[in-house]
Image 1 (cartoon, rainbow, N blue to C red):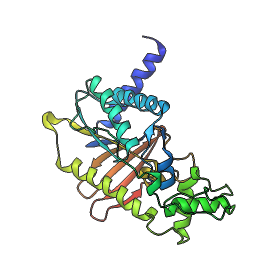
Image 2 (cartoon, rainbow, N blue to C red):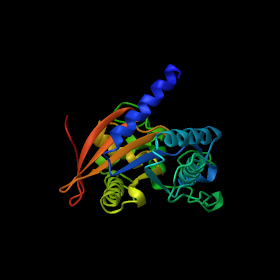
Image 3 (cartoon, one colour):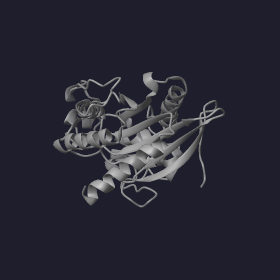
Image 4 (cartoon, one colour):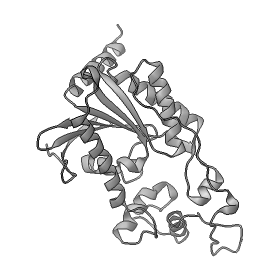
Length: 287
């Protein structure tokens, strides 16, 4: 056996040993790289389809997940966001896992969801003299557009930019200036904690046949794990600190009588979080 194969096999065995104590494991996967139509960009209804690179990323992460799943002792459930880019990613992962002999309990079928045509969009004219110059068709994307136009800066000194929308979103919320009907970071955090609560309850109450452990693959979006990463590592909001396309945040769930523990692994670093199922409060366990 070559040295590289020995190293790989050693890491695989070590991973199996370290994860054997968990009642349930969840792999949170960001979707692959997407592209958007003009109508989606104008309306803010960003469904997206994967680019060629995004398809390759989804295939790669599917094989990486297949390599670390214990096929003899784990059964896999796939959850996916309703957005097209996440559903397409999950379908690719599903096909890879199925071809690899992984026991799957559920899957996502993929498929497209329609968006409004450009003619039906709520276009807002800017102050520009060119009448064809329109902003995004949602209050939040409009706010970013006008912030860019006015030369606003983030607290970091960076330009706002659509690619720094997470930072803009969090800062505007802290200042009480989020546009109407924009979901706040606190609201999204509550949804994220609710997912973790469901997983914790499943870990406590559902035991697959033959004593096998459940493993969830949750395909979603960068903001879906932002609070988990901020709580664990202090990263996730600023550009480049959250998961890249098709990158995984692994969460091992260990249930206890009075509470539970989440072991969060991201980019080969691991942190422990304590979870109170009654209050749904999550706190980092200091080393």
